[in-house]
Every structure is written in structure tokens, then in C-alpha cells.
Image (cartoon, rainbow, N blue to C red; front, side, top):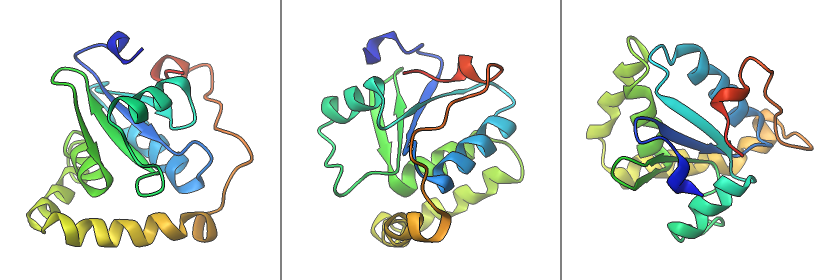
Length: 140
């Protein structure tokens, strides 16, 4: 299933019921001027395929993944978020300065936000349904 993702794209896998994650996806879509990203909810078939392929423990990582089919790699947590920001242009790409912070510190902060995201930002009953204009950017 993940073999069908175009090699010139990267796939952002996100928590489809999380309001913060959905808002982040809409932000990325708005600022992805080079059409670099595709999207899939964690709860989708593609999301499950990524989780199984890379043996992801969803109790420890359940909010954002960045899959690069060109080299079959997966970035998680803060590394995924910062590598997404890197491709969004100025000023968002300035966030990559935080890549100099050790991974365990970045992910500690990331995990705090991820743990409380439903309480702070809310949760949907079902995954976001993209508008017809955005449908081409989503994979199920």
C-alpha cells in the first residue's frame, strides 16, 4: 500500500480526530507552495500500513509521522514536525533551528503537548473529511 505513494512526495500521517493535528494539516496545506506533501490520518488504511511497516508503538507515538518514500524512512514526533517546517518556506522554515536541540529534549516537550492535545484543543468524533478541492492531497 505505501509503495503506491509517489517518490517525489512525502506523506504526513496525523491523528485524524485531533483538532490541533487537523489545524496543523490545514496550515501545512496553505503553506505547501511546492505541493510537496500528501496526508493520511493515522486511522486510515495507509496510516495503519505505515504503523505496521515501521513497527510503531501507538501508545508512545500517536500524533504525527513523516514518511519519505524516496528513501523509505520515517520521522516521528518533533523531528517530523521540524522536517515538515523545513519545506514550508520562510518564516516557518526558521523553526528548523530547533534541530540543534537534542532529540530527547525536543521530544519531551512534544510529548507534553501530544499528551494534553485533546484537553487543550479538543477532539472530533470522526476523522476530518477533506473538501473536494483538497481531496487530491489525501490518501486513505
